[in-house]
Amino acid sequence: MIKPKYFLYARKSTEDDDKQVMSIEAQLFELREFARKENLEILAEFQESKSAKTPGRPIFNEMMTRIESGEAQGILGWHPDRLARNSIDGGRVIYAVDTERIASLRFPTFWFEPTPQGLFMLQVAFGQSKYYSDNLVQNVKRGIRQKLRRGEWLTKAPFGYVNNPRTRQIEPHEVNAKIVQHAFEEYAKGTHGLVSLSQFLVDLGVTSSKGKPLAKCAIKHLLSNRAYLGFVRHNEEWFDGTFEPIISPTLFEAVQKVLASKARAPMRRNRHDFPFLGLFRCGECGGMFTAQHAKGNGGVYRYYRCTKKHGACSQGYVQEKDLVAQIKDRLQTISLCDEYADWMLAKIDEWEREETNSSQSDVQNLSAKIKADEERMEKLVSAYLDGDIPKEIYLKKKDTTMRSLATLNEKKKDCERRGNTWVEPLREWVLDTKQAAFLSSSDNFSEIADFVQKIGTNHVVRDKTAHFSVPSPSHFVATRRRISPFSFSRAASPRSLTSSEVLFCALGRNRTYISTLGVCCSIH
Image 1 (cartoon, one colour):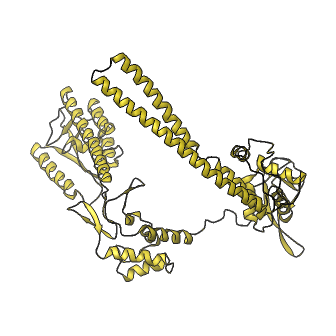
Image 2 (cartoon, helix red, strand yellow):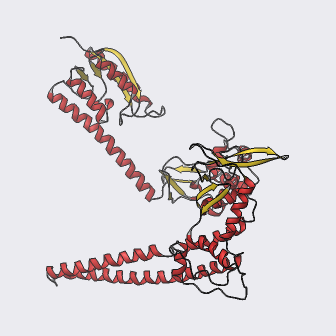
Image 3 (tube, rainbow, N blue to C red):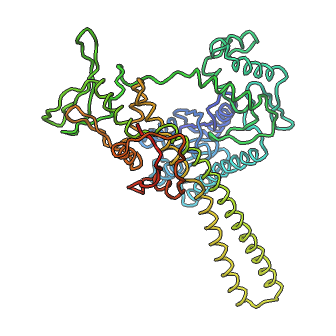
């Protein structure tokens, strides 16, 4: 019988050189000594610093490929768990034994022979290794959850804190905590940017691990780190901590406002400023309108035209000033005077208060009924357990009470969900009418384009004329302008509206919009 040749495989569980440094060296020493005593021929040694919990170890795969090609017939390792802790790699080793690619597996701490009993024991060893890994993960997750419930910090203390091994919690550092607080206070004043604050920290002795000033991203991370508020972060989620905060919420929010104000605005996708680009389509062929500059009469003008990508199209150019004039005219038709809009907003606030009070009253009444049913259920169960009522009556009354509770809980949820959901759409529409009035005389083309995009649909240009549709309420305002262009009377009081009427108007359910805007409105 030909004596098998072996590959020696040693592995440690982490890629961090500061951890388990002796693990590889200890394995190599023991395995070489074992090979010498057993007179085993070692063709090559493989060393790997990678977890075996998941497949994909490059060195292990290289060794198995060379074994499957017949270069060696055996593997020498410290224990089966060094070879695999997952089902795929373990199955690959077992299959190599089944197909006689591996004639021998030798372990100083584990006996194996290529027999049915030996294969069974090898499968058990691999299964135990996988179970250990899986169980370890669950234990770690359970420990993390428990630490989060206790409000404990999970990892190394951030700058400004120090780990206390006795309490397993972090505490403010005597000096660094004051430096962090000083940095927040200085930045909140607005006198420092990220770069100058980095230099400010250098003067206080705070530098990177290489002795250089902290990078801007590191300064920004420090200024936005909620750990200084006493929070613990895990999986992108923040939890309440039980350690002492360094920064007050007021100071933290002040710093966040400064950071937001100094944030660089995103670059425009278009090199040129064409505010209405991407808004209108061609009314003839349906192609998008593009824009370009043109010189003439001693100036530079902006034009919009059909891209003509859908075939032949007869539509020509539209100058931006003409397009803006048409849009402003349309905005003027769907605007309301400030006096009436302000009256409507005040009325909405009044309805909102009434609706809130009514909703809260309904919720309280339902909560009281739910509590009464729950008490009735407890008494029913107690009476049954004490033998005071027969089982048939108990089940019947329990079923009735449970169905009553389900109905009451559903009504309570509906009441809580209903709330004032109609208020904000209505308030937003009224504010839009005021915004339309303002923009109809504004020269901020970007704001006009954004507003038209928001309130309008089916934006098209045909025969150098812009068109777009508006919701029902705004459409009714435009109709009222054409039919009854009279003035607002300060002496007159708008007719009182019902909340249901206004709700229908806001949601566009009442197409006619009759008798909801009053008779004293001037739309001019």
